[in-house]
Length: 386
Length: 223
Image (cartoon, chains in turn cyan, green):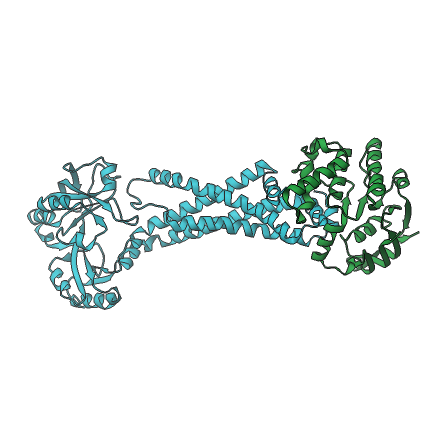
């Protein structure tokens, strides 16, 4: 009869209670992982930021345009490697709930600065040749069953009118942090039409993306760029791409922080669930522990029995929780309106924290009952009536 | 016969708030190896406390308890645990078997603490169960056994490591007359055939009759 057998038998002594504890831990770990995944999704833009990219926008607000003429002047700032630009086209595809980013970009330079959008070379060449061509993310292609050559009609709002784009490229995201659901098309195509229909808006772009040689020089280069346009009609604000993305999150930062805190509060709840089970279990068995001590079982052996039982329950629960997290995350994403979280994946760190929580909670939850078992005198334990 | 247990000037008291309540006082006792001694007396006379002190599961307030040349009152908790596992077998009133283990697994429990390999441990446990006449019930769980059978399994557990001393606290207190006779007969056999030194606390005069020596306690003192 091995100690391990006694440990396993004790764990399964109250099957329903053990099962409920495991399920309780599992649900809590799943909730933790889900919340962490939502927080990760919120920060996806920040995560995807490149250290060597700066964003130059209008100093007053992102919604004000900048002159296209700034491009050449920015390109001449020492340390600047490449300059590209984009505008937020917006518009409605299919219906208003079908949200994804639609950007008019400088097709000659945009994809050089964003190598994370991986496009087959022949598709990219076809895109460049056709003025109303567009490139879409694989997620958009799958969601709307689109293939090369299909037409995407978009009803413009920021740029009014009916627009038609031909799908000439489908990009794959380079990694999990890259948004797989964007649509990019030629700025030239948009600008040509704007010149005819609203000439006062022609030659304007939304923001510049500046690739720099040395990320350590970002502060100096940002300052140099902004100095170029100081006291002009359209002053600029240049910052790192990460800072730019974080700026978008500032309005939701309280909610994100609350979710982050909640996810770790859940770890505390797991601790209470397992701790409660172990305290009850040890209390009920005070008599048995006293008998084991009388027979000569050492503190180390009692530690193995009690902490082992606690860790089995906790680890089984966290394994169950992590196992169901995958379908839960998929289900959550499906339930959300399309495009809310273009990047939605479980970070490896979340899995690691969940697994570590399983070990740590199992260990910590056993400490109080263990202390009680070890410090209770044998004669008191033998007198205990549960 | 050679003296196995020597108790000198033993005093034990408990503290309840600021009150010190004496339980045992002025106990001097010698028990020879192979003795079968019964302690009798009214409730609260200190019988069980004396048994617990000699068995090393409680500590005296003062005095000496020398067993086989070792003053158990001087041992720390870890040393006491090792000493108990090698020298004392316990028989409790309510058997105290582990309900999730079978009879043979319960008997094997104290053998885990020995360096014996798994096969030998099992063989020892089976032999101990044969001695108490329960070889055919070795795979039964405690809930599948009668009270008398449970107590016999507890006796098998007590003798599995072949300790010199068996301590029995009201071993027949929870048994019917027939089962009690079986258990007492078994203890008698262990004493006579295996030369086990048995210390028994009992209220039952018929149980005490089986002992070769009967000592009475009154208000914490040996009469």
